[in-house]
Image 1 (cartoon, rainbow, N blue to C red):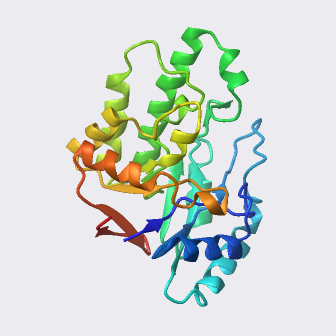
Image 2: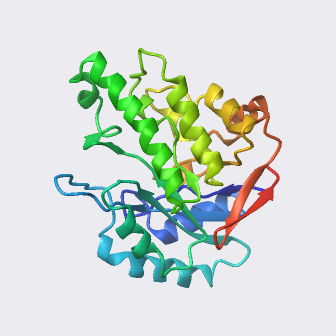
Length: 264
């Protein structure tokens, strides 16, 4: 069952229109296409240029729901990729509540104001100790994200490795605590295949983290984090092999925030 949920359009930082992604999904043979544009409620002092306008959320939902009536055999899922900030999580909860989401991805792109996936230069400007602290705090925020109950699955777990800067101290306990929170929060994780095309050189998350998730019975999706039509299913065969290596035999899909097992 070929599904791809983590995908962006011009509503945020994607290149294609919604119609363009739908057309590409049909061409790729997808059974379900999820649209999950960025929705970022930043605290004071943080500016985000790649989020949709927070006040246009209703228009976004309306366009996707209307399009879903015309996609025929292709099921169009209403999703969102929303950022976790401790300062705005309650406002986010309130803003999301009126809408019939199929799924909400929870992501951390900022660690105490530091943009972890914007530019390699940002990381290069930090000391080794500062980089380790960003990583440590990232895992704490993932744990808080999971405990909030706002999200259905975690986006690109271990994202701070994007530019190749990995921790130089042992943070396995911090990562384990974050995964414990994901499991306790009844959330899933994704294999995000975008990492294979970036300096990180591997999918998000790493095989070790994926095995740790499997030991906790955390469900799994495979997603491309597609910002272009041609990347809707990039590296999916490779991701299925990685999932099997980690011990996964099946994935999950979502409908109205209900998780449903599915074969790959």
